[in-house]
Image (cartoon, rainbow over the protein chains, first blue to last red):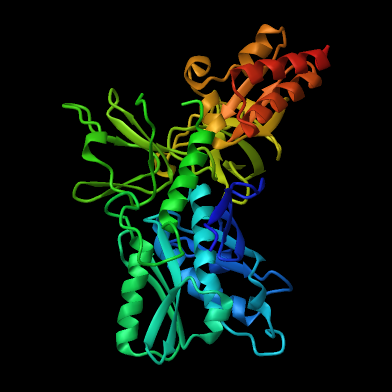
Length: 248
Length: 232
């Protein structure tokens, strides 16, 4: 699988923006805020987080609303919302590219949840928030796992392709903060308690790998997926900061 | 100034050796840092960690984002509307307006107060809402307003911008005989005034281009030469 790629602050009018691509998905995030909230939905104690997911083609429907409902509480935990009462932080996530299979038959069938896209959406939103210089409590990353049941026992695949998701008995998305706290957990399909324990442990290893050591010394064991997304984010943001503060 | 800039992400641990300590002065936290009792410092922004051991201060430096007002900063505001006692002044787009009392202008009394129409520009200092008296620096008459990034406005407000910030456009333009006045607001606004409209636009564009393309000293000199040729 291709390593993640990102472009930062490429939209001139937004406060912060980022393009994030990984695993066949390309997401553009535009972040504006803190701006004034509308009178009827302002909260006098904390900032609102407004997440807007737009599909690659057409207008958003129930599936996009569900993705927003999953992402919004996660982002709310990351943003220092208490610093900005009566404000709103707008996060717009536009799907630019999706792996071919993602939209197969989706028009004929009922709209269904696409768990595979959530990590890319979260990472794009994180980069957008960080370039918009919105105070955050911590950073986070997420990963998608597919459990396949074979005769020899169940296997866990990290960052599965859409075909692998179709064949899997259960699909899980888990997000962890940099401090190894569980941030979001969504599952689909049937699975046993032991499988869930293994999934949780694998996801934690994938998301938080190499955090303590400070470099990716403990590599291997998870095959194709190369580097930790948090390391990737750190390196692109560091390059961006060095570029914009070049006069220092 | 440290040799190697230290980059931090929100929630990172800051090494104790990086935090300045001083016998007498209290530690001052700038933007981008949060104090978690009892004694932890946690960054909230992604940027370069800057410490000033003389002032016993530490902050996280970023160049992008929206302006968040802080007490004591000089800003350029646009008057939105006038109320009985105050002006509603906009500091950045789509945010709640700031209040500027009409009596806080220099030598303003109940009888003689400056009359500012919507769209007028004022150079002012942010004060906390509870402290009352704001000493505004006065209206900016004429000229033109340019939008720049927060990093550039901070750069323009540095006392020695040529040595510390490698920003020479304004000095070069002045040396070339262009006469102009500028005022920089910490909210990413630059006001330029001159007798000729051409000069105003040239100065504003020069700053904006230096900002957008993050030009070096030589490139800035080249840009100024080009602009001077177009002006005359």
